[in-house]
Structure formats: structure tokens, C-alpha cells
Length: 463
Ligand code: SF4
Image (cartoon, rainbow, N blue to C red; front, side, top):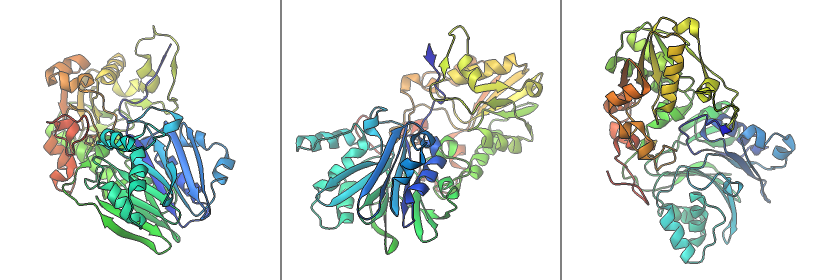
């Protein structure tokens, strides 16, 4: 018996913060529900009614963790923070579920984190050697420890002092006894934005989480910005020095929802541009364009627009696969991909097909998709990828496998074409990928395509 892995790339988290709304936890729940794609291993919400903090956290997707309304109703108060987790540091274990909560000399503090702290091992070792006791394996736990060690009177000063010690990626929401605080690393690696609803304010990883609450998008939290929300409203109270920006380009390629605004730009528009650019760079003589659903749908539409080749639905994705679907019979070859995708034979039979995919990781899924398309009657298959070859792992909060597991690290384009058995193969160039945003090209992290890591830390190889 084996279990089906339903995704090959996973991002580590989504975060939500709510201030100044009755039943704040209910808004946090809605926000987490919209951000489910950013982490489905565990979910949690901590609320604050001005007297106490209330927490509920569990393993699984948001809807199953909060399947009983009483759990949500027990989270009282006008402010709340929430977190969806996929583990990239620390095991998938209840002890590591966020938000983390602690009580220290300065009061209560809860923290939810998206990203990876790249010098966490060094920080943890130093903290432990000075007596700190850690309860989790999560990199996030160094943050409350660093805050508690500071001696400044004001919480924001303590927070700034702690954040200055961190390297890597952090988009944070924190809750204190009387405020909700948002903070983003100076490189701006992971997204974070501010919204408004009635008299309250919301912080979320992606703007799709504001839409579900009917909240209005206000703006991106700037790289390095520390934004305090309390009874005087939201205001910037600090900035960690901005050296260089390194927003994750993969948020546009794959991770973020196309209906979100991320890094201040509309993901759908960017993803269509990726597809159009791919069509111009990597044309194909074909009858139809199809996508590997769902993450490649928008780029495939862009490819169709850029090439003039008709877009068709050639693969249907089963949306009802659980995280641990049991493959009942090992002799059913390729059943894992067949469970997830089924070809529309009437669409592809006898056709020269362009397949648009957002990325190729190990190549195993691409090979199986090509196989089922060929068995479905496709005459030719021209595989087009709306990002450059993936050659390096990510150390900033995305679960990209090791160098050895990445097909493009080990093999040439010609070899990959042979391995996945396609008639032609074309990737988007780095320059082409970066050309689709209005932001300067050097504002983005491209390390998984270039091996040029913008922030160093424990275990990150030098390019
Ligand atoms: S290495 Fe890749 S996935 Fe990681 S932050 Fe950089 S661009 Fe994003």
C-alpha cells in the first residue's frame, strides 16, 4: 500500500490578522479558508478579548480543524491571528502548529509566520546556550524568545531589536494584549497586505483572503515595514533597513492564487503575461493549447493569446483527492496521476497539442501526464513551461526538493525532452519571466532558477 502525493511543490504558510471586529476569529477563519492553498497540514487561530487569549489549533485543513462551530465560537474577542501550515522547518507534528503563543515579562504575545528564518539554527543554539527552553521544532519560535530577551520598555522597540537578528524570509502577524502587528522582512520575500472592513483592519498573505471577508484592499505591507494596529488605527512604527529587495518570483509563477493581488500586482495578469511571453519565446506548430490544471490554466490562456492557437480543456483534474489517498493496487501503473488527471479524449485525439505547465520539478509527473495524453490519442506533444528550469532548492519557505532530485539540475534540455517523452520542450527564459512585472528585475528572488541566493544563512550554498 502506498499513499498519493497530490502536489510536488508546497509553500509553507498563510497568515491572517484581524483587529477591531466583533467575532474576529470568524474573519480569521474565512481568511484561512481562502489561503488553504498555502498550507494544509495544520491550522490555528488565537483570539484576544482584552482580558485573555483563546486558542484553537489542530492538524488538517481549516474546515476540518474548525468543523464544529463551537470551536470557533469559543475564540472570543475583537482581535485574532490565524495560520495555515505546511512544514518546511520542523516536523508535521501538533507541537509545531501555529500561531505560537507565549507569556513573558512584557505580557502575552502570539505569532504567525510565513517564510523561513535562514539563520534559525545559529540563533536557536545561542538562545539555548543562554538557558532558553524551546517547546517546538519551528524556526518561528526564536522570534518570541528574541523579543523576551530584549529590555526596551516599548514592545515595538523590542520587536525591532528581535527582527534585526533574523535573516531570511518572514511575513509575520503578531498579537499582543492591545494590538495586532504586521512585519515583513526587508527583502520582501513573502507577500503580506493590509485591508479594511467596517471599523476594523485585516492583514493577510494574499488579497483573495480579503475578498472572502468583503474587506477592501488598502495596500501591500512594504518590505521591512512594521505596521502597528491598535485603538488609534494602523500606522507604520518602524522599518528594518532595506538593503535589497528579493520578492519571490515563484509566487507569480505558481503559489499565489490568480485572483489575488500579490506584491501590489494582479497575479492573473502577470500569469497571462508569462504565458504570452512563453508563446513568443517558445512557439510551437500545434492545433490546440491545453493546461496542466489548475495552476497552469492562466498561463495556458496567455500562451493561447500569444500564439493564436485555440485553448481547450484537455485534462480534467479531480478536486476531491485527500492528502493521503491510498493507492489500492501497486500493479495499477501510473494510477497516482490518473487519480488526479484524466484526459478529454474527444479534445486531444489526433491533435498536435501544446501542454503548458508552470514548472517541472522531478519530471515524474510530467512524464506520466505525457503518457496519458499519448494513450488518449494526442498526435504530437509540445511541452511548454511558464518558468525557467528549476535547478536549486529554496531556503525561504518553499519545499523544493534537493539538487539531486531536480531533473533540470541533473539533465540537459535534450535529455529532459527524452525522459518525459515529448516531441518538443521549451522553457521560459529568466529575462522573459522577469519582464512580466512592472517592478525592476532586480527586485525579485530567482534563486531556484539561478542558484543566486539573495540572503545567506545556515546551510545555504554559495552560488
Ligand atoms: S528560491 Fe525560488 S521559490 Fe524560493 S523565494 Fe526564491 S524564487 Fe521563491
